[in-house]
Length: 262
Image (cartoon, rainbow, N blue to C red):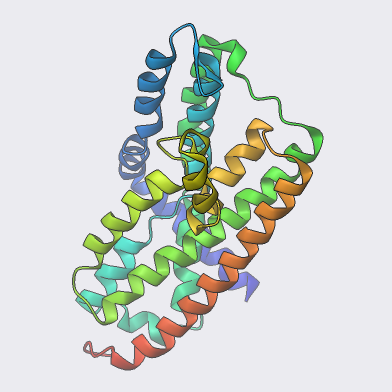
């Protein structure tokens, strides 16, 4: 099985290189944090907003840009198209589960995304050297795990929405609504601690923070050990919930699939 996954990874990576212009466009569409950086840094000026100085906003939104590229998943368009157009049919006959193929696709473009975003991050930090994050040893050591878990939750959530294509024809519209919630509730466009405390307490429990806000807080070194433990518990909880839901939707959706060759 691992040999098959390796082959699939090489094929997916070759496809990324062939369509690298498409990947560049996708990365450019994810530059919203830089827009928000300009807005919030201008508002902060030489002072601060709720404890965030201008350099703090640089660190936050540059970090958000990097974490987004590492944890983000964009397979919903492939799932929706293949179910709607019947392109899923031949993949049902292959030895690897179609969801595993989507997982490999989601992984395959990460090296190129990192390569494209790294110069932007470097330039931003050169322009604002005081914004360089200085996480503690524990936060830095656990950051890769938080990114992996965030990616896993993101993948399962996207698959859950995409698999609704077995029942509905407008799941991309549903995804647009989901992304609006993600942008606000994950900390992608506004740091969660800038919301009123009561709102923040609710937002940290939702799955969206597990995708971006929690790894970002680790990167910035903002969490105490108990907060780190709570963050990982929530990431694991949401991963189990959406992994189960993904499997449930697949089992029931595939029974409804009626494309030619299915």
